[in-house]
Length: 249
Image (tube, rainbow, N blue to C red):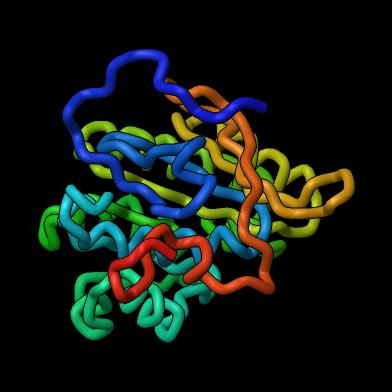
């Protein structure tokens, strides 16, 4: 499929970009008010951590000059990976980590409470323009929760997140990892994609060569399409446009 083109003018709002070869040509970045889902291979977790770091950068470098909130629903936050990503983006690791406010949920009830009761206040308190909910559906797949209850609560929480992103003009990103296929997981995926205005998938190609693809599946402005994505055996330095010394990689 073709690379991205902008089919109508964008406002002067800053875009939060990945700053990765190929990817930016398809998807220039997130805008305030976006409610986005990135799903697929475990690489989506690194992408979310990268955004938490890059959000702190100046507008001119593809950041939004903001702290971020990271709600960890699957024990996915990796301190050393964040430190490395910070260095690659010319930030001090300690300073970068101090601007990522982490809240961990271990049950669906805790996740729901954090989102519905505490998230908006936390975003205001920390002036965070980026909110990440990591492996969002995972806790709602708990077999101790009835399918009916989990579907009702998940739908309610997802609607709230979509509304919060729009009203607070924040970038709200949820990630979703592969889980055992079930009616419940299929329902959750459908709900999240329906409520999002940006949907991104990171998957392996189904034909040779079996590389990974970054696919923009849904967006109100950018043309949809796919580009090759970094393979696991190559370093992040290769794919970041600029390495830690500030020169083109």
